[in-house]
Length: 640
Image (cartoon, rainbow, N blue to C red):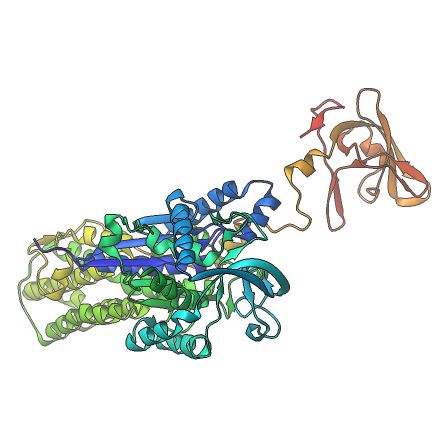
């Protein structure tokens, strides 16, 4: 038996600083479509993704959350997995840079590079971007800000280890020029050559001392390995690479990678830093690095600060997994940024999924049931229009292969939907409802419906990498076992006779835009905790003493109309005078006898001449003020 050809593809590993939005998840879904397509063609595929879990930003976020960094990344890595799992992603390996094997190999790689003279110790002084965790020279800044994220940068100076990039620059340039498809698209290759390699490469900072959450340099433990060596090497450590040469069989089997799928914003790291590291290690370079464009919301890049972030799980809850996969894959061009809005989502689902595809399948199966009780045969009662349909249907797989070979996933998806559109046109041309009224046309009607079912079968098989659940549903409704990829290259392989399901399932229901927006508004609960000013830890909260108190007496403040003065019993013979700005919503007599929550350890302060010995908890919305009531708890009860 012939051994399957190997295919290894990876995504960039996601930084675990928070919940990823659909712009982050798009890359994983794109890679999943490529992986599924290659498997369908008979390749032995290895698909790896994962999370990048070290660095200063994570250390700070963990501190803000009041937990240790490992607990923080355990949580955020799981959130990331939940987001890609809800998109039905078929990865083979999920790597974390906190995996013990990875950490050990990073130390060994760092030491190996140091011992062979590719890494040396010096001091770094430059402009530092905390968001990107990267140093820049003044000439690299754009308008005085970070060239990658546009955020503020600050002067920084520290001892560090450096990688001798310039040593390998000429060799890298020659490799890029000799391998025209190493960097795709073409515009990205020109950018790397003209902006970075040809002007001259500077040595790269590869360790830090200003934070501790990272992999220690084992021979100089005050340093931690910086992101470049830590994160980028996941592509080989995930296969069992060993710096001592005792590689796992997976590494021997799958390396070099066929393609790294990454965002265009990290292209420099993957096409300059990473290849040079591999050259220094004496390892073959990946065959291709594909820098995909960004998926935008409207005309802006997604970011929490812009308030335009959309999450995959929210979209799946609203539209369903395959609909969201379609939207992600269809709206992203090969080289330019793609744009997505809720209006576009609804329009695409209604026009492409519900009408072109869903209605086609529903009509064809319904007519088969109506005219032939669900079972028909290929009677070969042919006309010229049938040959036109067959020619277009059989050209689909060739177009898909051409576009997928170039990683033009959106174009390949369009090729499949052209097939479905041609089927709808075929229905209009043959008018099966008229044939069904004439008994002498029964054979012709069977041929028409058979041709439609066969065309749908071929389209559904081709659709599997992109909309896997939808593909499976269609093939099940047709009730065919002819589902292998090779069967899309010939017309007429559908079983004859064929018996379809009695009642077709609605694949995609048409959406009402107003109803969709009403659901979005109704569900506008933040998908992750809102970034809070003056965030506190559990230790800070523990300092606040909240106590149930009963209001014994209440009267208006003699010198302030908006203030009420209350005598409140906090239990244990502790009666306080508390002044509150709640007179606009409460009369004194309404409060007497009520039990409220008091901040009992608040420093006393004079309000219009009367000392207030605490604070009553209350909420305010515009002019409305409401005191927090706890009627069933006895005075003196501690709230925690």
